[in-house]
Structure formats: structure tokens, C-alpha cells
Image (cartoon, rainbow, N blue to C red; front, side):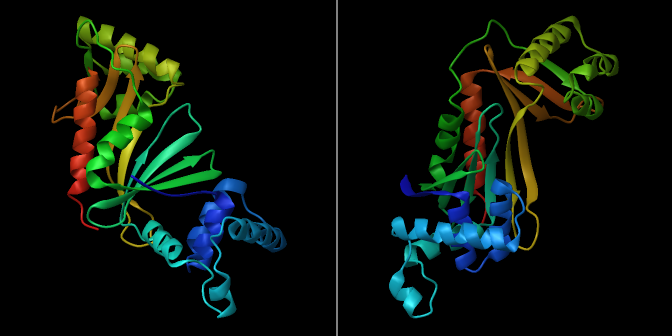
Amino acid sequence: MDYIMTCTSAELALLVTLSGYPGVAKGIAEASVGEKGQKEWEAIMEVTTHQLILKQLWDDERELKGEIPLKDEIQHFIKGYVESKWMIRCSNKGQSNILMIHQIDNDTWMTHIIDRDIIHEFTYIKGADISSVIRNYYSFSEVGFERAQMFQLTDQAFDLLSEHRNAGKVRKLSSFSLEEEQSFRIFLDDLESQNWSLYNISMFHNPSIERDPILENIVFFLPSERGIWVVEYTDHPIAPVKVALNTFEQWCDLLNGVGYEASGVNS
């Protein structure tokens, strides 16, 4: 790993603006502090400029020449960050931060941890590090379970699981065996402990900064005291959504698959 920098949303927005991407900078800033009037933004940017000077990120000589007042390595970092074509997004329910992993070139990626939409931490990594970075980010415990747990759902039933009041509807839409019903009850308990929200790891392709990123793949999962529930789509003709409790080893294999998929994309 090669640490790059830690900065606030305002600092990142200013760096991105100075590097020639004002539209991207606007999105970064508004995600942190909301929409502001022109005078408010000018005041924020003036204070932020002083912060960049204090951090020695501002190049006075370039400014005097009328050039972009940022060091070469900062401009290179911003260009790679904004123009990245592939990104992995790791949600972390119940926590105040989120992990993004941006591809810079064929084997260089950049981790981007966003804390409370305010603090941004960046580090360069290699493609081979992706699975371990994600594993360390979640830090799920290595626990075992007494026996395998699994049930299958229709697409409609799976969509309904986002709200507690729909649990009865899901049962009516499903033809659970006794074993599947037991697994479903255990899953509901774990889902309730996470406020009825699944975690997910998603991969996006961003062919152009003028377009919204395209979702290429997504994995839903849920930590449990018994293991990690993983949602998988199958070719079952009626109930294609398989929800199964995975061991820690299976979880690591899944993350290795995410890393392998990432290593196969083109920058």
C-alpha cells in the first residue's frame, strides 16, 4: 500500500475544481454540506485554499506563472481519481464510513474511505490486494455454525424483504420446507439486527465523467453470529434467489472472486 493523502470534502472539491473538473467537484461538495449560494461557496473555497497552503499542497510558483497551483503528483492523483473507469463500492451498514476502490490503470487501484461524507482517505494498492482490503474493512469474525442454513425466494419476495411488515407476505409467496422455514426465521432475526438492510459490494463501470456509472455486478450479504448470509442468483425457474449462510472460509472465497473479477477489467 502507498498512502496518498487525507483531506476534507471541501479540500477535495477544490483540488478537483483546480484540476479542471468543476462538475465533479460540485457533487463532492454538495454531498457534504448541501447546496450553497455563490457567496457562501466563495467564502468556503477561500478558507479551503488556506488549508491547502498549510498542508503544502499549493504550489506558489505555478500560481505566479498563471498555471494550476498544484504539484504534479497531486494533479496526477486527481486525474486518476476522477477519470477512473472502474469502481468497487463497499457499503457498511451501521457505520459512518464507506469504502470505494477505483481502478487507476491495469494493476493499480486506489482505496477511498469516506467518513461521514466529510473526511476522505486515499491509498494506492495493487489489484492483488483488493480482496484482503475488503476483508479487513469489514473485519467479520471467523465463526462456525452448527449446520448449513439456506432458503430460496422469488425476485418479488426478495424485494419485499426491505421492510419488516412484509415478512408475512414473503412467507405466503414462498413454499418453504421445514428446514427452509427455520433458516428463514434465523435470517429474519439477523436482518432485524441490521435494521432490515443488507450490505452489498457493487462494481461500476464509468465510461465517461459526463454519464452516470453503470452497475455491472452486485453481491448482497449480511453478517451473523453464525457466519455470513450471502445472496446468490441461480437458474431456478420459480425461486432464483438463493440465500445461504456461508462460513468465513466461503466468505473469503467470495472476496477472492471479487478481486479476480476486478483484475480482469480493462482500464
